[in-house]
Image 1 (cartoon, rainbow, N blue to C red):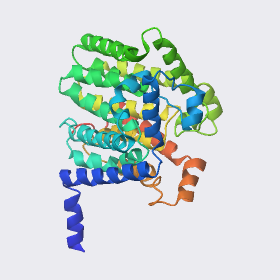
Image 2: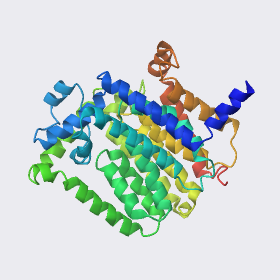
Image 3: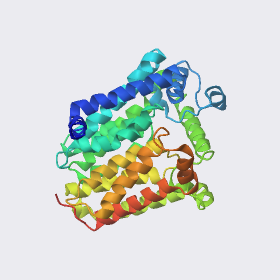
Length: 383
């Protein structure tokens, strides 16, 4: 028994072995979903991209009826996704998922060394949620590793590539634009925002290679309309959809989002004297990544890999961990990582905790408020 225990510990202490273990799971998951015809998200990405390049509008109800899914990404996405979309599905699906998996691993393992913990611990904590995103071919992995790697690049004083990555995220799915706030914490702020404006403009007009400049604005308008329609039809895992306040929150989602963001902005600028502190920057990024999920009107379980990555950076900026820290650490991992996996947890029980008690949203709300409190009070922040 001891030999088995030691072998397991040795296995999961090896960066190379853990990477290939997760890579194998991602490969099997991709193959199962492709060969069973269940890769709906990938087919929506690919078909919408091909439609766009053929001059067919993917932001229509006819597209939704044909694919049984909305295409929620900007025309910029169809330009960037084109090299994969033109591959055969049985190749493109693997390229998409395994590239995302690899880049997520890379982003975690290259986090700043000031996060003084083996990065493998962070990756292992995220692995279950990462594989949950692999199964449905989700784009949120891309958004997540851009958040992490752009932060690392900013810390290493490589702002040009960092800003480019942020703008790729921002112009395909708006989540990424909020990371631009961190530019205030680094030198050459004005220059970096100029880079953001330049890269954003280039990316936003890039679909003109297909549609021409005259036909581009209507596509963005139609994308915005279909996005708003989609977000009002479903119930998602966020505070916006939490019963019994959902009717009010959904009806005023824009005001709630902007109001909460405005409050965070006031706090951020009021604490400008702490911008030079690495721990503060890391924790504010973690708070921001949590806000994106809690106040989104389209959060799903696997989307929380973004918030979880921020929580991990917050957790490992602490010199010591209290009992409450550990409770949050393991309860979040169990609720978001283990419970949604039907081979690990009974589906009816999960449905009760998810759809009746809303345990996941309530738990992460507590976690997020706790992160804000400790960030502002400098609690246990020095390694």
